[in-house]
Length: 408
Image 1 (cartoon, rainbow, N blue to C red):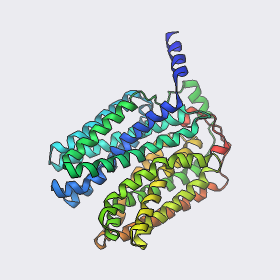
Image 2 (image 1 turned 45 degrees about the vertical axis):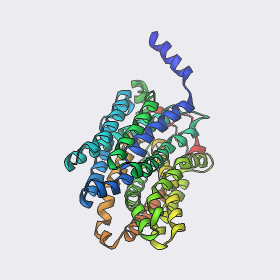
Image 3 (image 1 turned 90 degrees about the horizontal axis):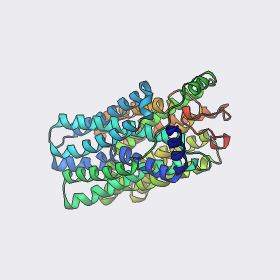
Image 4 (image 1 turned 135 degrees about the horizontal axis):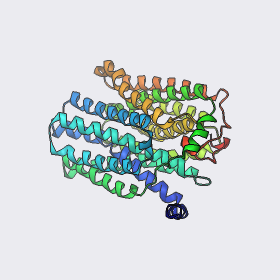
């Protein structure tokens, strides 16, 4: 009886806007800062900590591998994605990995820290996204877009933080500043409610009544994996390529532009999903992103550089939210974890794909990244063929039960 009363009290006190803010803080910590603060700090570590180019690339790869490991945990231990303990411990461990980076110059220790940071980032991402889809119901479903904007907020904040601290401190203070901001986000995200555990009866009913959507999910998985390759090529080399073509403050500030563009982008794409089908919008977003990635490789100057950073920032989180929404709508088992794993594999492959052309600069790498994103768009286009808009959905499949055709 006490548990029922507690459950009813929690339901009555639940606020969709507060939940959105908490999930956004978790995503800002886990993704915007925990994963991506390494990008603006990397040049400082090259200059001040003696970090070699090869070790810098290895640390990035270690983070991508850790992210894949986290996704695999979500696949094989799905209860983790519904665990408050897993969320809170992942946030605390992530803060620790950031705070420990400046305490050593040992490359092996750095590698382990970035590996663990990647793993915890993946867990935080999956728990937060699953929580959003499970708890936000009509008319608050569109708020999930603002929660995804937390990633953009974290990216912009980390860029500004490093830009300020590099003038008054060093690479070590940049890492400590990132750890402090991540700790603040952790405090905000602490009360976040994960996706509820479904009852055994509901789980059996869901499995027995689940439609066969394998062809569409396969297309979504291929598209999202290719997006992981193209996106990470741009995410790794876009700033350096812009610095080559535009130079000056444009290159160093591009990451802030990416974050500021990403902040409202997911909410904008979520609003568009109220009016147009997700597969159509996913295709459009991928084409826009491909243009943005290729732009600084084809046209030099400040204008194209800023447009490129804006287009990249305005699409990459929207693509993620739409792809995960499609996977969940298709009721494919463990859709979020599987798609995250495919994306993670793409991120590991991306730098390897362009490594042979990097000796000629970064422009060829960006062109390859744009071509891969176009291939992702082609895979997304196949989703539009007889797409099952009218599938019934459940909490167990990470999408609100109210969702109808207009959301898909």
